[in-house]
Length: 396
Ligand SMILES: Cc1cc2nc3c(=O)[nH]c(=O)nc-3n(C[C@H](O)[C@H](O)[C@H](O)COP(=O)(O)OP(=O)(O)OC[C@H]3O[C@@H](n4cnc5c(N)ncnc54)[C@H](O)[C@@H]3O)c2cc1C
Image 1 (cartoon, rainbow, N blue to C red):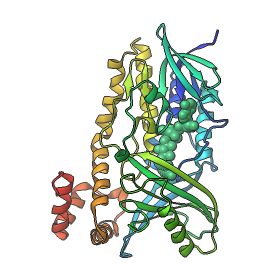
Image 2 (image 1 turned 135 degrees about the vertical axis):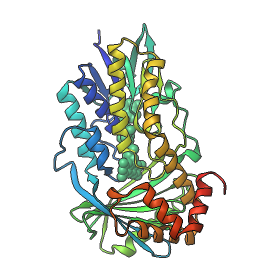
Image 3 (image 1 turned 180 degrees about the vertical axis):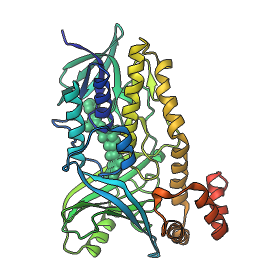
Image 4 (image 1 turned 120 degrees about the vertical axis):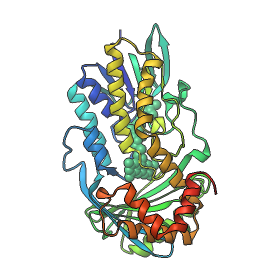
């Protein structure tokens, strides 16, 4: 007879492992089910992370191997080559994501979680109030509760009909290369608003240390179908012009969710976390921070649910409601910003970067207060302020 776990977690990305770690800490027996032969594969990430999220959600130190460097600033370049330098000392991190994912999963295992590798969940049944999760090769794990942490396009969310499939207009398409022999400032990321290469999106250049970089582009699916290689070719030209001696050692293609409204993220005995729950930033496409946040939050609500012997959808919905309370406002703002970027022409993007330099040129993002921003934009850039207000209020 297979053992019955309190919780089975499908997926060992940051969301799944964070959840497993805190469940183990609370004394709940849990199993992480990972489809690949190792954790952290395949890598689909530019490896940047908002440091605040790590400090708030992950209580252990990372090894030097997982934490590549601190990021202190960003260079933003407009279509007309206007530049903004934004500083945020130690506000960001560059990770080695493979190592990061492995460390999170290892810490969960050290606390008591069981990790099943090569376990691709392909069938889920509920029998006598227990979840039966079957792998592709018919291995079976049983549990009282279930976490769907299986990333964008989540099998769990789809199979249990909790999360609707992403529509084309709810997706960002991404392409990234790993470039070597690239000379960059170690503590600065670079972002290029270049409609020729990334219409409505942006190009990122993230330093990985040792003269390596992740260079990629992300655009809304409405302007770029991943099967069309035109933008990829243009990105390769951009790289070749800028870093003429560089070597390309890897390529990644992927999508990130970009939804306006969070879906239903729970059902009786189930919580969905991370990219699987579409909590990814709809502006930047970054989602590791929200994977950590939702993983931790789900562990908190499941621990409560086990203490109260109540795994009902109504009880677990506390997780979704708390998430909405914490993140909905910012999420909607980011969604609007993404729409705004898509609808701006080159001149407006130039203006945006000029204003960004004006706002952030002499002050660190860490110290910035919203009233200061509003006052400065209203006084110095009233036309822009009015137009932006129109877009944010949905009136073109
Ligand atoms: C090109 C690109 C660049 C990105 N760059 C950044 C960035 O710089 N910063 C950032 O914050 N975010 C970035 N993201 C997004 C980020 O990678 C995700 O938001 C993050 O990985 C989400 O974590 P997660 O734990 O929810 O899911 P994932 O990390 O996707 O983990 C899900 C896990 O579930 C496993 N799995 C899937 N199906 C099954 C199954 N049926 N059975 C068992 N296991 C399964 C997968 O193998 C995987 O290990 C990027 C995304 C892309 C595509």
